[in-house]
Image (cartoon, rainbow over all chains, first blue to last red; front, side, top):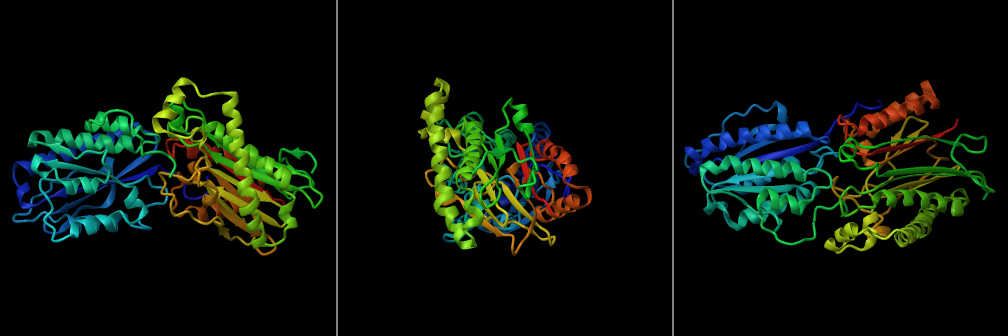
Length: 230
Length: 287
């Protein structure tokens, strides 16, 4: 075989996890458990499908962001280490979005990579000043990989479901996944991971998947945006 | 122009062709056909033999439910164009003039012929109720069902004109060891979506490249659907792959490389690689 051999197409999956002060206690405990479970689900999916290699990174954020898993790590090799809430930490999402933008920006991902997936998990509204959130989101979606990225959001607690998360998702057909209580966090993250994996598959029937996986409640046929042509 | 040959080496042509196409593992698992197509021809012309090579990749989404036919029609009409007009490739005699020929003649003619062929196919074989339901739910023009990419090369004795719409790769291997990607990058191609013959904007989405072998003599030209490039572990892959192929052609010969090519496309199409339909044509310049 000429060249350096063959490999599956990389699917970069970035988890952006809220570690602000309000996440302390039961919420953080439930989140850690849920992420570990989600990673196992993704590893199982990777084994069963025929195209992608899942590479996971984890970015925690509070007042400032910090990489928890900085380097793209094969999902089958990831051994989950617990996140911790930052006492008194704010919910500044903008710096986290900029950090993600830098991680998947131009010339950072393989040219053959599948579109990246970004999962934002939070229990609150952003505490960024002014229009920093909008500015950071605009920066994230200003280049091809960011624009094409599959963005999902899990709101822990119904109060966390905000227009900011909807803006982050950037697709009216994709709902914010809400975990009404700590017991639901694991189930919602599993739904998100399944959505990420299935929507990454070639020829995915997006509308059917949205309805099935996320309960979007979108009735009737809709023009799918997830088609092969630009 | 006299009758075409199938590209087997003859004394009249400086080009010989190696090709392989393998159905992707993902398609195999879904009981789908290989939606790639490929073809090459050599035509004798007064000015000397002209060759054409074409690969096409039918889109995988359910909206493009006749993409396999669309790809086949694309390479077929690329070859027909070459038969009718390919003699101009060395007659026009200038890079900018050839690029204009590509933009003004090749692209619109091949597009129009493809669309006409799609319409004729639909006349002969109307959409089934199931197909029509898919088309109607998306509000698609019927041509969308046939969506495919196309990479075609007209190869003369001196000039090579490459025309490409959509994803896929063309790699030029020079006799001096240089490896080049001659077709300009389309920044809108994000690895998830592609431009397509089926789009109203198709003409403007074509990218062209002219190679003047008086300045850059070729050892070979590789044309591949994206299943090949998406399987390559090297990043970027053309330099390493191109250098290796050039070395193999030199040390082992064309016949040996031709025997290996099906193994390479099979690996790329497998679960170790991209899992996608993978098609490669290697046009090798005889010394």
